[in-house]
Image (cartoon, rainbow, N blue to C red; front, top):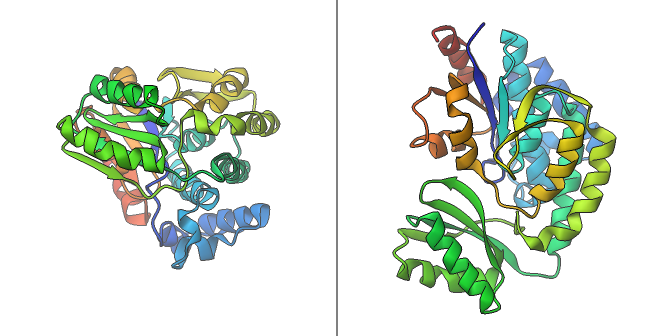
Length: 312
């Protein structure tokens, strides 16, 4: 099939109790992947994914849960269609799912890797009351100027996720973020709201997590990719282990350039396929591209996406 597909993968915030259950109930492949991931990590993924629990909000569990469901969705789609991506892109954590799609990481290795990543991030934030906040309705320059001014005043806040036009996530110390809410509203933000996050991602507070993550990446990453992965750090493609080792530790402390990434690749693809829980990235892409956007989050959407791709 000649259709050029970009494979997309969501990050933290997309999780929900029950995600992946339809795959588990209807696919032996999904059951095996959940079993293998549980054996590898010691995490009971059936319990984590399918029952009400407090762990799913803790980053060391959130990250492997999201990646596992994304990897299952991707595996079922590629097994059914044989379609390979021309590019793979993930939002934050989703970059590791994109590496699975590019066959640069084994799926179960990646589950274990992001479980470690979550632990390292939590450890880096330990003893600090940290959080993340979303700002809606302000342009990049305004948010950057406000956060820079706050840092000059001794506050620890950074613009970290460039999600869409007028939507930026800010990370830092929670009390500094709380104080920032009124400042953003005074600047005419439509909304400024704290998010339910247990870490402060993509900012200097995570500096200590970089070296141990790089060491584990050296063990797990493969030398070759079947498709380029778009870096959250640069919004540009990379396709070698050497490049990945340079970029992925930086991803912990540098902003996620998601909207810039979509802008950079849009002319190179015919459609986007989002794998995993929900369709968060479809919402972010709404005003960034006119290309078709499909999602694979359960068996019905898997079937619908396969049928829709045939029409392109």
